[in-house]
Length: 385
Image (cartoon, rainbow, N blue to C red; front, side, top):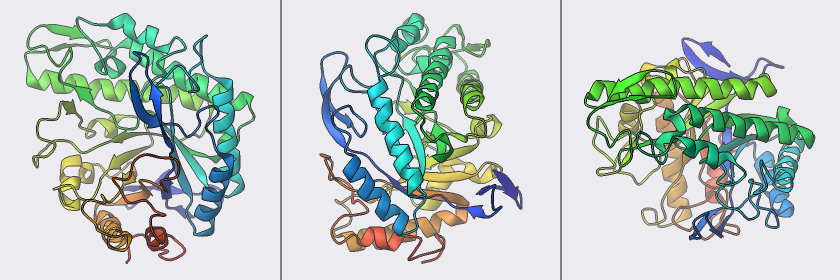
């Protein structure tokens, strides 16, 4: 990481050349059974018995051939069976072996890997630690960033992931970044944000007044800084030189959007004070917001020192009638984001192989025109059409 003209950027420390992350999210989806017995569709890329090394190899070969250099993948802790969690305690070694295999294959193709997750594992002892804080003052997702136990268990998860990968001889030097959470938010339906009076003592050791709007916002901002910086410390202690990031979807203002959504998120100014290395902002076409309006709501323009990537962007099939028209729109979206100093782009997603979601165009949809139009081999500069 370095700054040029006051703005953060990535660079290759061996050559000193500018590094521009460009690539895709790679995921497979499957119906799975959650800890309450409910069934739902979720990431299954590395699930034991489902990981497809042949498909992975084909994807990585095409990414590399066309000049892409980063692939983003999800770790799955949703369920008891075949996920990253070991119900007997800790993490599943067979699951981590699949992740290690993926990283090794990516390195062989010159592609960097970005690991992300939505939550801690629901089994293996992690959830029990988190729920020590439930439920009068803190509940549901708010426990993650606002409590000491949330900090402890997220740090332990990343410690166990990295230690497990190291024990399997995974080439950690092929990991582009560890993403602490895919899309960070707080939930207004649960304490402490559902409270309108009283004070709460949070994970950073400070108390906040729930009857005061400024104090409530300070609680979220301060704990985001404290939590992310301390979890990052755990990661770099095991993998010195690692890059650490967090993901965010668009805030609900100042330009009104996501009306009625119970999820609160505001990355800035907090992430600018955090020790995380860069910021991952997600912005999809087909939303009522333009790129300029996305940038205004995110607020990143006022805090240029940390690089920003668009770790997810995509085009809905309901809005764009063909892969070709989606490709035109995606290129224009990417170019427009350059006005706001986005420094990398990862499309959602690579393909629809073994998934049940067809709501968004993929890079390989139809005749793969999207992949070709976004490819660095076709457009060396992401900021030019």
